Image (cartoon, rainbow, N blue to C red; front, top):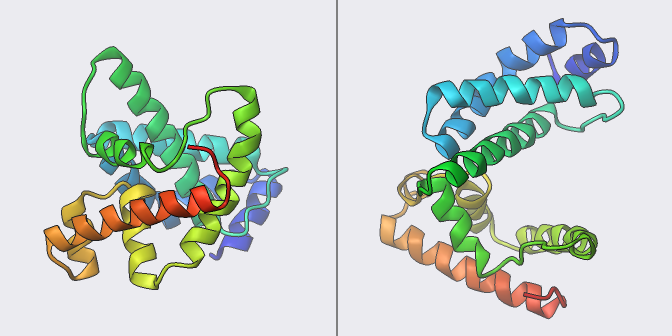
Length: 186
Protein backbone atom coordinates (compact mmCIF):
# COMPACT_ATOMS: atom_id res chain seq x y z
CA UNK A 1 0.00 0.00 0.00
CA UNK A 2 1.45 3.40 -0.92
CA UNK A 3 1.39 6.58 1.17
CA UNK A 4 -1.61 8.14 -0.56
CA UNK A 5 -3.71 5.02 0.01
CA UNK A 6 -2.77 5.01 3.69
CA UNK A 7 -3.52 8.72 4.00
CA UNK A 8 -6.92 8.07 2.43
CA UNK A 9 -7.56 5.48 5.14
CA UNK A 10 -6.69 8.09 7.78
CA UNK A 11 -9.11 10.53 6.15
CA UNK A 12 -11.85 7.90 6.18
CA UNK A 13 -11.03 7.24 9.87
CA UNK A 14 -10.35 3.60 9.00
CA UNK A 15 -8.27 1.98 11.74
CA UNK A 16 -6.48 -0.09 9.10
CA UNK A 17 -4.52 3.13 8.49
CA UNK A 18 -2.65 2.66 11.76
CA UNK A 19 -1.88 -1.01 11.05
CA UNK A 20 -0.70 -0.22 7.52
CA UNK A 21 1.45 2.69 8.73
CA UNK A 22 2.99 0.53 11.49
CA UNK A 23 3.68 -2.29 9.01
CA UNK A 24 5.26 0.07 6.49
CA UNK A 25 7.14 2.51 8.74
CA UNK A 26 7.17 1.03 12.25
CA UNK A 27 10.63 -0.50 11.94
CA UNK A 28 12.30 2.70 10.75
CA UNK A 29 10.49 4.80 13.35
CA UNK A 30 11.41 2.37 16.13
CA UNK A 31 15.06 2.44 15.07
CA UNK A 32 15.01 6.25 15.10
CA UNK A 33 13.45 6.40 18.58
CA UNK A 34 15.83 3.71 19.88
CA UNK A 35 18.84 5.77 18.69
CA UNK A 36 17.54 8.75 20.62
CA UNK A 37 16.44 6.93 23.76
CA UNK A 38 18.65 3.85 23.91
CA UNK A 39 15.71 1.68 24.95
CA UNK A 40 13.62 -0.61 22.77
CA UNK A 41 10.64 -0.47 25.11
CA UNK A 42 10.64 3.34 25.24
CA UNK A 43 11.10 3.44 21.46
CA UNK A 44 8.01 1.27 20.93
CA UNK A 45 5.97 3.58 23.17
CA UNK A 46 7.14 6.62 21.17
CA UNK A 47 6.11 4.94 17.90
CA UNK A 48 2.69 4.15 19.36
CA UNK A 49 2.36 7.76 20.53
CA UNK A 50 3.45 9.00 17.09
CA UNK A 51 0.85 6.81 15.37
CA UNK A 52 -1.79 8.19 17.74
CA UNK A 53 -0.63 11.74 16.89
CA UNK A 54 -0.92 10.89 13.20
CA UNK A 55 -4.46 9.57 13.78
CA UNK A 56 -5.36 12.81 15.57
CA UNK A 57 -3.74 15.13 13.02
CA UNK A 58 -4.73 13.45 9.72
CA UNK A 59 -7.13 15.04 8.80
CA UNK A 60 -6.75 18.00 8.56
CA UNK A 61 -3.05 17.49 7.77
CA UNK A 62 -2.30 15.78 4.44
CA UNK A 63 1.40 14.99 4.46
CA UNK A 64 3.15 14.54 1.12
CA UNK A 65 5.27 11.75 2.58
CA UNK A 66 3.69 9.67 5.31
CA UNK A 67 7.05 8.12 6.16
CA UNK A 68 8.69 11.50 6.73
CA UNK A 69 5.65 12.70 8.68
CA UNK A 70 5.72 9.66 10.97
CA UNK A 71 9.50 9.98 11.40
CA UNK A 72 9.08 13.61 12.47
CA UNK A 73 6.29 12.71 14.91
CA UNK A 74 8.38 9.84 16.32
CA UNK A 75 11.48 12.00 16.62
CA UNK A 76 9.52 14.68 18.46
CA UNK A 77 7.99 12.11 20.82
CA UNK A 78 11.43 10.63 21.54
CA UNK A 79 13.07 14.01 22.10
CA UNK A 80 10.27 15.05 24.45
CA UNK A 81 10.75 11.84 26.41
CA UNK A 82 14.52 12.34 26.44
CA UNK A 83 14.08 15.87 27.82
CA UNK A 84 11.72 14.63 30.51
CA UNK A 85 14.03 11.79 31.47
CA UNK A 86 17.10 14.06 31.43
CA UNK A 87 15.37 16.54 33.69
CA UNK A 88 14.83 13.72 36.16
CA UNK A 89 18.34 12.27 35.97
CA UNK A 90 20.85 14.60 34.41
CA UNK A 91 22.46 12.31 31.89
CA UNK A 92 23.95 12.22 28.47
CA UNK A 93 23.83 9.87 25.60
CA UNK A 94 24.34 10.08 21.87
CA UNK A 95 21.22 12.14 21.14
CA UNK A 96 22.08 14.72 23.79
CA UNK A 97 25.62 14.92 22.43
CA UNK A 98 24.45 15.46 18.83
CA UNK A 99 22.00 18.16 19.89
CA UNK A 100 24.66 19.83 22.02
CA UNK A 101 27.01 19.95 18.99
CA UNK A 102 24.43 22.01 17.10
CA UNK A 103 23.80 24.50 19.91
CA UNK A 104 26.71 26.69 18.84
CA UNK A 105 25.38 26.85 15.25
CA UNK A 106 21.61 27.12 15.72
CA UNK A 107 19.98 29.47 18.21
CA UNK A 108 17.33 28.05 20.51
CA UNK A 109 14.04 29.95 20.77
CA UNK A 110 13.53 31.48 24.20
CA UNK A 111 10.42 33.62 23.72
CA UNK A 112 7.28 33.93 21.66
CA UNK A 113 9.03 36.44 19.39
CA UNK A 114 11.75 33.87 18.74
CA UNK A 115 9.11 31.44 17.49
CA UNK A 116 8.48 33.76 14.54
CA UNK A 117 12.16 33.61 13.70
CA UNK A 118 12.13 29.82 13.89
CA UNK A 119 10.24 29.75 10.58
CA UNK A 120 12.99 31.84 9.01
CA UNK A 121 15.54 29.51 10.56
CA UNK A 122 13.79 26.45 9.09
CA UNK A 123 13.76 28.01 5.63
CA UNK A 124 17.42 29.00 5.93
CA UNK A 125 18.36 25.51 7.09
CA UNK A 126 16.48 24.10 4.11
CA UNK A 127 18.51 26.31 1.74
CA UNK A 128 21.72 25.28 3.49
CA UNK A 129 20.94 21.58 3.12
CA UNK A 130 19.90 21.94 -0.54
CA UNK A 131 23.22 23.64 -1.26
CA UNK A 132 25.31 20.80 0.14
CA UNK A 133 26.74 17.96 -1.91
CA UNK A 134 24.74 14.75 -1.47
CA UNK A 135 27.36 13.04 0.75
CA UNK A 136 27.57 16.03 3.10
CA UNK A 137 23.78 16.43 3.29
CA UNK A 138 23.37 12.74 4.13
CA UNK A 139 26.04 12.91 6.83
CA UNK A 140 24.48 16.04 8.34
CA UNK A 141 20.96 14.56 8.37
CA UNK A 142 22.14 11.22 9.75
CA UNK A 143 23.86 12.94 12.65
CA UNK A 144 21.54 15.83 13.43
CA UNK A 145 18.11 14.64 12.30
CA UNK A 146 18.33 10.89 12.80
CA UNK A 147 20.85 11.35 15.66
CA UNK A 148 23.13 8.55 14.49
CA UNK A 149 26.44 8.09 16.32
CA UNK A 150 29.46 9.44 14.44
CA UNK A 151 30.66 5.84 13.93
CA UNK A 152 27.43 5.03 12.10
CA UNK A 153 27.64 8.21 10.02
CA UNK A 154 31.18 7.17 9.07
CA UNK A 155 30.21 3.59 8.23
CA UNK A 156 27.19 4.59 6.15
CA UNK A 157 29.20 7.30 4.39
CA UNK A 158 32.14 5.01 3.65
CA UNK A 159 34.66 7.05 5.62
CA UNK A 160 36.76 6.76 8.75
CA UNK A 161 35.42 7.90 12.12
CA UNK A 162 37.86 10.81 12.20
CA UNK A 163 36.92 11.86 8.65
CA UNK A 164 33.24 11.81 9.60
CA UNK A 165 33.87 13.82 12.77
CA UNK A 166 35.92 16.33 10.78
CA UNK A 167 33.25 16.60 8.08
CA UNK A 168 30.54 17.20 10.69
CA UNK A 169 32.67 19.86 12.38
CA UNK A 170 33.18 21.64 9.03
CA UNK A 171 29.44 21.38 8.27
CA UNK A 172 28.52 22.94 11.63
CA UNK A 173 30.95 25.79 10.92
CA UNK A 174 29.49 26.25 7.41
CA UNK A 175 25.99 26.25 8.87
CA UNK A 176 26.91 28.91 11.39
CA UNK A 177 28.42 31.07 8.62
CA UNK A 178 25.36 30.50 6.42
CA UNK A 179 22.97 31.54 9.21
CA UNK A 180 25.02 34.66 10.01
CA UNK A 181 25.08 35.59 6.29
CA UNK A 182 21.28 35.25 6.17
CA UNK A 183 20.86 37.43 9.25
CA UNK A 184 19.77 34.72 11.67
CA UNK A 185 20.93 35.92 15.09
CA UNK A 186 23.03 33.51 17.09
